[in-house]
Length: 403
Image (tube, rainbow, N blue to C red; front, side):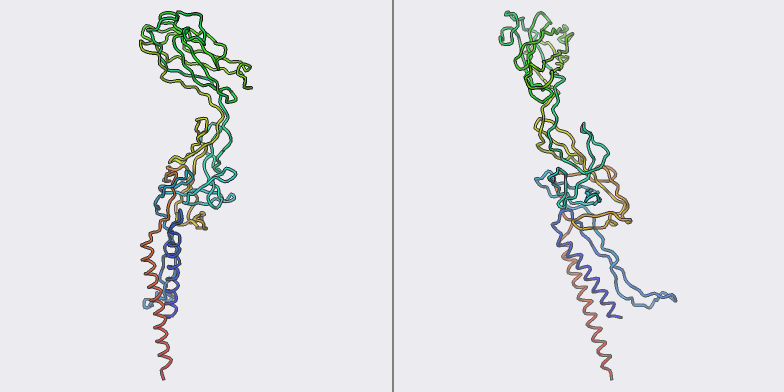
């Protein structure tokens, strides 16, 4: 019986060595989770009793358990590298089959999808045409097509007109003659094709607390005037909005008529120099994607050459009731089983899921020093069980040699 007992011990030690060597081999594998062996003793029981005098029949491997503790985060210069700080798994689609992983070294494939090194597509929540995150789960896609332009509809100014100014002595108004106006400012506006145009505003004081505003687009024929009046305390009284329309023929770009409002409601008239604190317009030209990054909630923000930015998707994370019930399938990926329970997929940072760290990957949680110690112990166990076989052989030989 000692032979079979020792053989079970050798097999157990061999299994231990296999697991330890796999841990050491993957010490540099991104997202790898170390495993450990668990054993149980073997007793022979009969229907007639528990066998209290039984010395036992060895050992058996009961489980190879994966340790899902957090690995260290290693920061990189790649914005597509993602790490999970806390619980959860990335969800990837392998030809439609859901797999789960902690390895977050992603890239953009030739079709524009975010994939891992095996080509499985990262799953996340899609965005609407307005850039709002929806509840639809699917392949995360990086759209590199041009962002459609948006024509200017409103120009908003925050400015001050100098109450100490006197009306110009030269009349009538002429955009080319600075002696016919008191102050001027300009900004860029956009037509429906995304072409930029220069809007110039001219301020002419006509009387105490009264100003006329003229405008030109690309130096064309001036429009106006629009009269604005101020209260004795310097606040605007009337004439807060200036409506401007430029005919398509005058734009010369092929775009339709350009019509927008200039909001002067925050204009004041105080006894200080003319100044424009802010001038903002809501139009923009077509834009090409130049970069994108992720925040801790997994939302990917894209930035475009036209100065715009918008959400293009949100990474989804999955967690399970029993991580140790997951089935490893290689490439640091897992699939769910009956033992693990169904995946609970949601947004990072919710329901116990971790948060996303961009430009970082999670290192393997292998402790090399501990593994080397375990390796020595497993080796000694193997040698000790082999010695049992050698001793049993000697005893058996001695019995055979009895005369």
